[in-house]
Amino acid sequence: MVKLLHLSDIHMGSGFTHGYTNPATGFNTRLEDFIATLSRCIDRALSEPVDLVLFGGDAFPDATPPPMVQQAFAQQFQRLVEANIPTVLLVGNHDQHSQGMGGASLCIYRTLGVPSIIVGDSLTTHRIDTQAGPVQVITLPWLNHSTLLTRPETEGLSLGDVNELMLDRLRIALEGEVRQLVPETPSILLAHLMTDTARYGAEKFLAVGKGFTVPMALLARPCFDYVALGHVHKHQILCQQPPVVYPGSIERVDFSEEKEPKGFVLAEVEADSATVEFCPLPVRPFKTISIDVSTHENPQVRLEKALLKEQIVDAVVRLIYKTTPGQLDQIDHAALHQLLAPSHSYTIHPELVSKLSRSRLPELNAENTRDPISALQAYLANRDDLVELRDGMVVAAQALLSGEDNSHGAVDITADVDNLGEEQNQQLRLL
Image (cartoon, rainbow, N blue to C red; front, side, top):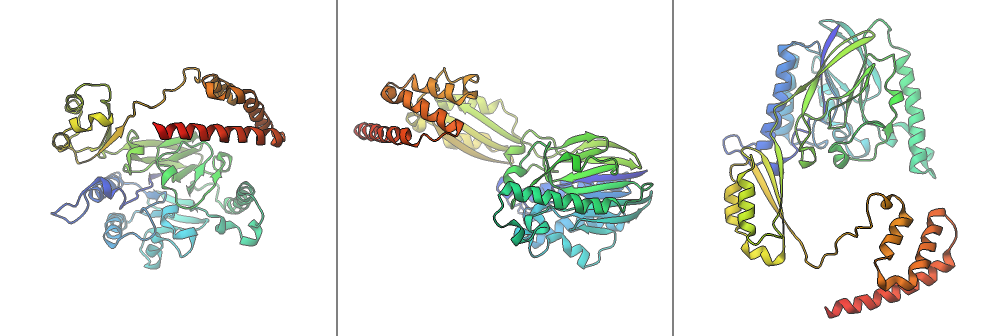
């Protein structure tokens, strides 16, 4: 049985806007957070001790991290080298140069021949001797179209067709590695990808380049005893047999991960079985405070009372408050800054609410918005200025949804709408 620690998506060097420069170290405080959190992961690997460490990709925000960030990352993994714990560093999308050209930031470890460090920058099988015996790890780094396909092969194809062709190539290439596996030896797939059953985290907004979705059927196979994934920042176990696991990222990179627990996974793997334990990490909290003062006579009092109730000490805070233009002079920003001072860092985002804003039509509820035609009819029923165009617009919409050619009717309606729009524009100019 092989005991392993599985972590991923460190993104060391990101989130500097949520911190400040520590005068004692010269480091951004958020970089210090990331270093401390990674150190806790390595501490656990050493204290168990584990037989193998698997890193699922995305060490840094991009392929060219500053030297101090590279050094901080290397210092932590050097501790595993000194303990003679084999480590596999998989290349993720953020570790690659643009479009996968020019290598990856992690390849320096292979170039320098760092002992016990294996870099997974290609689809291949690594046979690793651990303290608990041999283990075989297939590495599947982040794949771009250029990885599996040539430009002539993709000419004239839609994106969907290109992705299907990539999946066909991936199936063949992965099958070639699977056929070389030794059945009696624990087998692990380490991959940086998006599966078709995973729930997105912040990586939806952080993704660099265009990837493609890999079906679970390609991963959850009996030939694998454990499938270690990276790329998705939200921890999730997608399959139990074999375990298909995203450990998630180890630190929050922005407010989209505000409510997500962060951590790593400890697993015990042997041929035909595995156990999985998620280990939460005590990371710095992110907190959004949303307050609507637009209907209050004294918005400042409302803001201060609300802030005093919040636990913000050492947290990264985002204050969002809704106010009307007429209330702006009543807001004491110096007082707000003083109330938010106990936080680690904070930002203030006022949102103006116009009294002229149009409220949502009650008829447009969750039931009829599922039907575009019903939603359009409900909308038109509340627009007296569109009475003459109502029937024609519904007919045109039905034709568009059914794919029918209604170009003649559409021309007449568009012309009428244009004329009506100009009349409304003239009215607005007078307001």
